[in-house]
Amino acid sequence: MDQWSILLSGSEGIGKKALAVQFTMQNFDETYYDPTLEEGYRKQWVVDNQTCLVYATTTVGEIENAVYNHWQSIYRADGIFLVYSISYRPSFDQLRAFWQEIRRIRGDNIPLILLANKCDLLDHEISTTEGAALASQFGCPFLEVSAKTGLNVDRAFADFIRLLRQQ
Ligand code: GDP
Image 1 (cartoon, rainbow, N blue to C red):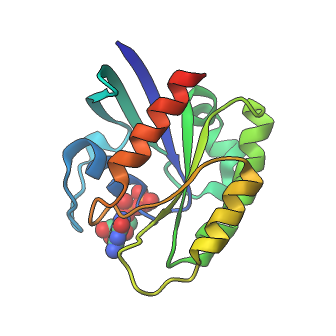
Image 2: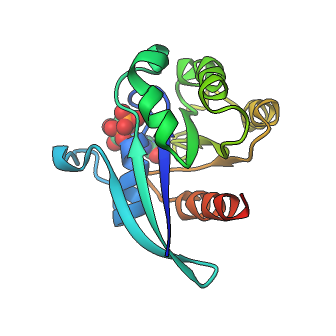
């Protein structure tokens, strides 16, 4: 069985844990917090008739300090979701510097997917066009998701497993 460790990275409060919880437990709870699960969420899953084990981990703390706080998780991950919230521009603006750190640490051979989370909200600060433009600069796929409604969450992980299997 193939095993993949996928890191959800991005600013605080944009829904990284909520995405991991939605993926592994099909559940969204504004008050949900289980400290024992903070480090990693695990799910055995069938993608294209092939079973795999997915570990979803999240960066903890702000990503401005990426080099100091996150180099180990960047180093260990098989693939990285770059996540921002469509309702919070700083989370979008910060991703470029974080992407440069990933490139510095891992070169350009680590699969990445850009995720625009909180698509259920109506106050969009970042348009779909802007998100897609950033993804094309990063040379990676782009998806709009919602940890709250579950929109595109399984699809994002399935796309990632396929990318990883093609490596
Ligand atoms: P993290 O710090 O990036 O791991 O963010 P959390 O997963 O702890 O989520 C931060 C806040 O955003 C919580 O109050 C969540 O309930 C909320 N949240 C997360 N994802 C979504 C989403 O897709 N839609 C909405 N409306 N709220 C979300």
